[in-house]
Length: 106
Length: 392
Image (tube, rainbow over all chains, first blue to last red; front, side, top):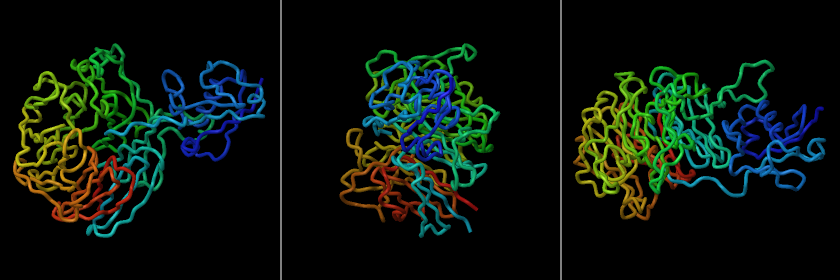
């Protein structure tokens, strides 16, 4: 089974990956968060560590995953994404939360 | 004719300021990495075209940027978009993983937390990048939570020098108000095996074997805000500086107190002398006069701005104790900025240039060793770091 998934990145990560607009990824197998992120990092190594931790693979605290008007951030990374994402009808959105940033105290 | 390139890290990007040897007219380039915190960027002494930058974000974490053409273009080492099929595995230039392998002897997993309990070490960001004096591809990174990493492949892969955390006092280290960061890395130009680092709030440490093993060097420091004022570790060191011609003499701006050692840190003595306040963050040494040092006194640890709204650099030409205020060209009223620990640098032109940046976004330069000052730029984002390259 293969799928073409659309991914929308936040502006800072588009800059880092040297892309404009949406990214399309060809996946084989089940379309899950993990599969999408694996393919994304494989194609754009500069994004490694920016969305999920290098070692634990946990989503960074102020990054969110949305699709089909749902917040999928707290779903298991191995849960299949909605059919509309797997079919390319709807994009998978990586979003910087409207919160966070760091304190400022050097 | 010689030129200078001033590398400025700010809360919202990096800026590169360039001038000729007169240092009167400046070109300002930037922002680079717009919108990101640039804690530090610095050039390689072995190749001035090689620059490294620490780019961080509360959302997306740590990025390391590298330039091989003096900042015209930048790359994340090993992180090129769409690598060619069959390309070798990409480096992990932003992968800072603490070493807990049995081979290093003492896997260290916790340090002291604010409440006195033990807390796991957690990587947050790179505070300081220190390129090797001799090899453009070797660079050290001081990180929060405090540890020292080294790359020997141009920042493509990083490995912790675990002997620092593992030497024994690590469980006693605890974060200061700004976090537990390793912020100062000094390489001895006369002895490639010797290096110094400083951590808030643990203190200063020295290695005599290229970073493999470490010892605390805090004898003589007195800190009122720790249970044992003269403890082996726990002191909030803000910055250390040395002159290349006298690497056994170190100058320190501590949380409170300006200090000096002449025996590579074995013994420190206070040199605050007539400073109006000895709290501050920066300290640096004149490029040609090893006994001429600079600090920017800050009112207190609870009021991070200059005394009386007057921004004054203090200079001692006697290695401390006797200080003179330098005010010409600096605001002498209504000034309430801070100067952070990595935000002062000197060039090595015949008439030594001194530079510092403020949290108000000004970068000030003096082309006459501090006698007179002028702003290079006034309205940058808050300045986190200032470094200078003197170019032939």
